[in-house]
Image (tube, rainbow, N blue to C red; front, side, top):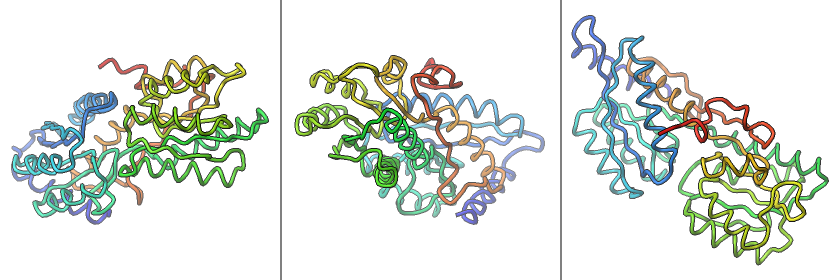
Length: 332
């Protein structure tokens, strides 16, 4: 992967050097393909990327320009959108995949066109791009699971948990589910009594959790692969009479991932016990660093799974101390 990254970067660096006047900043046109904009973090990423490009680019002689499109959750449309970006002669493509397998065809098309391809947030499950940048969803799940297990043990609770899975076409969702269940076996602190597929759809969060609580009245905890749909989770818990903060007898122990804006007040008020953040600001910083390295023909130094940003564990006692927390600080 590193040899492919370096080769793509050298091609880009050479093409920029041939077209830029001596002493002038290199203009790097990034074709940014969003799969959708159905959650707030996507706009936060976009704004942070543009801002970070303006901050990091000029000191190293790079002027970023952005061409952006959105596929509205349609893999075929995303492929067409990326083809359009390539036809506009962008210098690099960066994409958040709707489908981790389908994006491989676009990675191959970019390689054939001599354009470096960077996957963002969601990795390709097939063809390797020049680089991948995102959150470390494996580590994110590990820190949530281990902190939650320690909490349950400290409280003398044996967890009987409902798992709200994400879309299994998303590598991040797969990582979170696998790690959560692996840690259940190694820690012995909890077990998953039922897995609820949600496909990242709020209505499935609501109906799935509602039905799971009815079918498993013994459940005393929930693991949500993402808390972006917190309002749906809250509605299901309220309907079951289980929406209560920690310390109340009907409190249902709650571990989530991401800490999206709708979930932030719930954590501050003690309804969510543990989460690991998905740090949009840090993701954007890392993405711009990687784009600069590729533009200069340098190896960005990614690991085998990409240039990944670990999240930060948050609890009701610590959340107010976290800096650059996008769910609180992003003003949009």
